[in-house]
Image 1: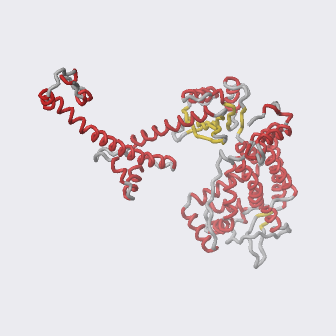
Image 2 (image 1 turned 60 degrees about the horizontal axis):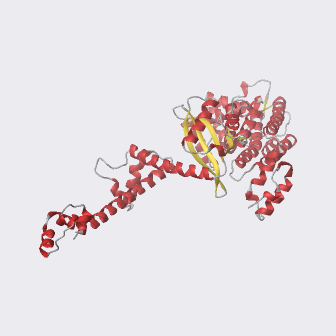
Image 3 (image 1 turned 90 degrees about the vertical axis):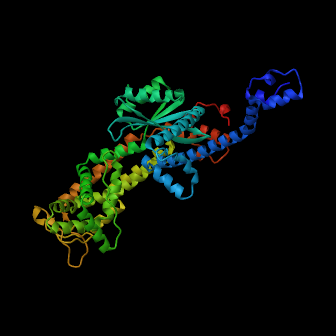
Length: 522
């Protein structure tokens, strides 16, 4: 005879090895020994203990999940880790009692920055695994890389991956890698090492997007060139279209002296109002008197030239109040206001301001189009051509803003007018060989410094800038039919059954297609 409970509890006695004398006395004695009593207790309390442990684990799991959701929210919103305790307290005050288990005692609450970093690292591992699995399941992927400096001025390489998930293109942030140097070897080795260390099959890399720097796209030792030689000979190197557009615009502006100085003047205007509480308050009061809404001045960024668009729009929107404020400050004897008013109260500055307002409005729209996720290669050349035609037409027919400005001040010997009224003018004595435009009594406008020579300089600079801008755009966006042919791969345009669409598009682009009609399958 055997005792089932003693066997399950791992005891060693007569009834676990086998009792050959089956009597009531032996059974009664066995029920009173310590081993059997302990076995009975374990069999009775084991389910209760298991249930209690499971409930505890579930409670702790829910608590940790709630805390990690808060950590994830903070990371997405770029909030500092120190705010976790405040966020948890807010949740508790709103009735989220599940977070009570996070505080073990007054010293242990899992809200320290080390705990937050541990949560973030755990989430990063899971996200990385998901991305790597998606990339390897995709038939191909592209890398988007750029070298940058962090707040400590340490060089880093930021990596994004672009691939297919369920026939949809997705872009995922992948990693930031520290660089020992900024050579092509350093960037190439760091890129390959991080991809391979995370388990990404680099043979499926078919494209690399960069900012077009020589270290990235160099003909002999550039990163893209090495990827083509050592990873995939069919890899396509892409120079970011939005970056090309910014470079073309910046080079055209820097090639014309008047336009190049104009950017410096925008910086002076920004500094005058942004770094002076008195000037800012006076400008705000003037806007209140005029019954208008003030617009913040924007500083042009050296590395992102198209930020000049926002700066120009702000100056145009604030022009009336700005001129009144500068004239008032100049009357008070402020040297900075006198110098700045001397600059902005000229035909060249006003003309350039309105010219840039017309030109940059088209360039900015083109840049935004290039940054849309729905844009494909087949749209690039057509969009650039359209903008080039508009800019070329501006040589003979100025844009709306510039035309309005020119029409408002027809040149007359000794007299012109503009459409904004200023307070005072005490700097005419500082100018020689020029005449000051004086407004007839009752006219509304500002006093600007004008001359036939100034108009000639502006007109020459305007034409040169437009010519250089169009030439730069055409040279950086070559009209290659092969690029347009890539449009057949953008299935968002497919409005017919896929087999029929594929055959029709392949026939249309047949000079560039090497796929036989019989091999087109769905």
